[in-house]
Length: 385
Ligand SMILES: Cc1ncc(COP(=O)(O)O)c(C=O)c1O
Image (cartoon, rainbow, N blue to C red; front, side, top):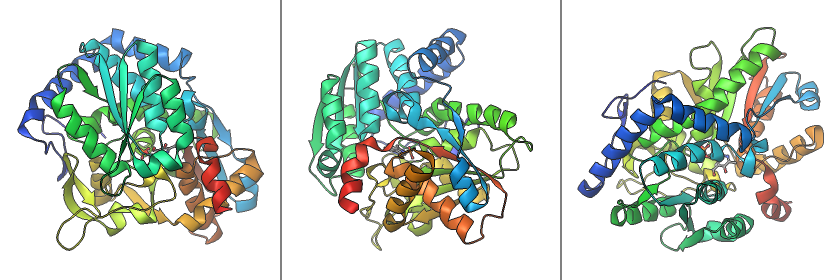
């Protein structure tokens, strides 16, 4: 999980499939990020914000009672404890600092679950930038609390009514808008997707999750590294950040997709939102709609580096159905006193299924990234219950 080079390729995936008018903006962003990432002052500023503002490092919590029930050793990387309630803040603080360094005064973003939108609105407020967030109209309804949070923070939320009215359509709309305002606007993408350099930038900004977890596992585990590293996948940013900390170890890397948005399991190689990867599509190559109870996993593609990690066999991608998710939320709530986001509950649900079916051997150690907290989902959980 290194620098993908100027062409932004991860094996046959990735690249920069955008209209001619966006090529200079992507090139400018790549150059600015290369400079900033090599600049110790930029890194110090970001590290300081992550520590004094976002609350890093986040805890590594042994899930004692769940572990005892399952006969394995589960450790939770607690991104739910980060400011704004998920890992999204790690990426956004980095991109907002970069935007300011590039002289941009506005941030635009797409959001599904609303967590990336809230994080963007938060960073914009902190750094005195304007923020506009595109959100599918269906997600505006099911994540109403986060819409209100964004507006309180001073962001404008634009509901997107086309297509499936979810994350895919919000992303298309944000890209369309960026074309018209590249001079003063930075497009703050929320996951390891989009045209190069975004998948690389977002993975680097989320790497902190994996690096912290690696050091914390070294202190916590006799073996130093866990046997399995598990994270849920929408576009794939919490998983990419986590995997980056363990890719050079013997740990087995497992990405958990929502069954209704499982691009690796059910997709074919195609181009979506400026990058080549696995994408859900029909026989004619039209992008299909994804369906998931978790708005943040309701995306028909997967980040290009995950497609490459799948092809190379370094990581494995599995699926969890909507029906398995609510019981996983309840189980974690009742055994550990932690209410996970519906997205994160996919990772927990897979661990429960794999432990109970014997796929995970007794006494093995499993690191799970708990990407966010469940407050935003209380309404959906109550309805499902
Ligand atoms: C809590 C939470 N986890 C996971 C995701 C999925 O995103 P990613 O795959 O980029 O980590 C989201 C997206 O909104 C989210 O809010």
